Image 1 (cartoon, rainbow, N blue to C red):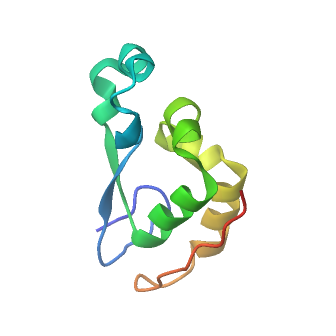
Image 2 (tube, rainbow, N blue to C red; image 1 turned 90 degrees about the vertical axis):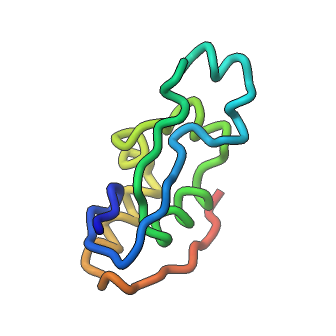
Length: 98
């Protein structure tokens, strides 16, 4: 399995909603994204933890709602550079920097 964010071969991935499920009931989100608000990517647990530590749900919904945008987030970019050479079984505890 490969993590779509860090592009490492990992032991397991989970679905990450690009637009957080908590935002799905918002009329503005439905109007903005239509059916696209159900889009997900497969990410490793380290990347998932880092995303949720660095980015609020509102920011995810309106600014970082696709893979390219996530990769451009300064904190995520720094994390991806750091984790790229780590082994597949490496699980990284996230540190808050909001």
